[in-house]
Image 1 (cartoon, rainbow, N blue to C red):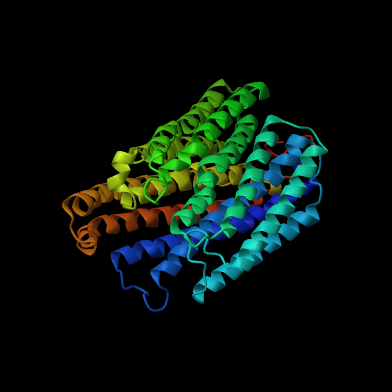
Image 2 (tube, one colour):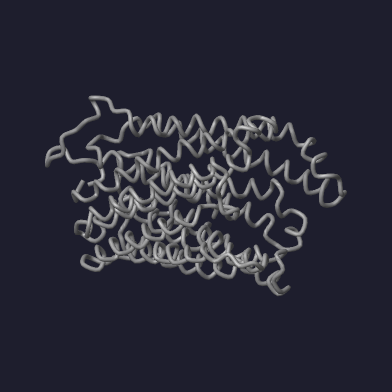
Amino acid sequence: MKYQSQKVAYWYILAAMALFGIQVLGGLLAGWIYVSPNFLSELLPFNIIRMIHTNALIVWLLLGFFGAAYFLIPEESEREIWSPKLAYIQLIILLVGTLGAVGSYLAGIHGGREFLEQPLWVKFGILVAALIFLLNVSMTVLSGKKTAITNVLLMGLWLLSLLWIFAFINPDNLSLDKMYWWFVVHLWVEATWELVMAAILAFLLLKLTGVDREVVEKWLYVIVATALFSGILGTGHHFYWIGLPGYWQWVGSIFSTFEVIPFFLMMSFAFVMVWKGRKNHPNKAALLWSLGSSTVAFFGAGVWGFLHTLHGVNFYSHGTQITAAHGHLAFYGAYVALNLALFSYAMPILRGRMPYNQVLNMASFWLMTGGMAFMTFVLTFAGTIQTHMQRVVGDYYMDVQDSLSVFYLMRFGAGFAVVIGALLFIYSMLVIRKSEVIEPGPANPVPGE
């Protein structure tokens, strides 16, 4: 560890992994309710379980992004974090807000807007935490060395924090409500989060492959340009059926088609950097997660997103299990796997260990990725049948759901594999063996330094 203040990232990563475990267990429970709809229906209704599942996902990914920033910005800026104390205060605010939100959901108190169900005081807490974070990292970068990686990372983090303001706007008009809602949800995951993803991926590949910084930076700026060009107007593919003007059908269809490009470039970027790399880095697990993230993101966000983004197709498929297939694979590839790549790289350095339990770590990659891929295929088939029976033939919704029960059972099995993989990953990160502890020094440097 080059800078003492990087230790802040350790606690963010621990908090993120704890919420990651809760999130996948909540998803497994929700998956079982699809198989047995009355399971826990009185004690813990499905809508509350789903809120916990989706909110835990968003919060732990954000904690991972914040932890990544506190880990990589000191190295890129070549100076300590401006105020480690503020970073810890930010973490406490986020964790208190998370516990408060979960407690509110269990008590039946929520805002009712999907993904933005948090009570108003929690939303304000998140905003305060975001402002603290932006002040901290911006002051660190401004007083240190500037690089393309920190520039892109800060751009993504500033934009995602500013877009959170739309979470407070809840007009009475349902069309306007959904429009502002998508300003947060879409412009986070299909614009600003892509910038964060590109910056973290660039940092990891720089460290793991040894490729010249100039090469990485050129790729990074091209990816950023295509992500913003396609992602902003690509929001239009959510505007087809919510009461907005008809021209959004064409704007959304055209620019959504371009949204495949940045994910294809990120996948190409990752493999080209490894191919060009001169460095035989000992942390093979972090490299596997980095390559896996870019590849699965291309298929989940790019290919599966394109499958139903054109308005002529979306007219029949929106809101079906095809949407669920795309959402699960896209989030897993683009953001879950990326955070796990960063954790796999940073934790040995933060804990003064060799790259540890790599076999278990890589086994967790294949379990989670295989489970998520199978889940995606199952949901895609289920969604195709659902689209035909419900939207074309006109069968009743619940009759169609009964016909899909075998797919939901297979989805549960796939989810079980994902949970086992997730728990295996957390175990490989946290359980230490004596032989893995090293004393950093000139003769025995920590891998990654």
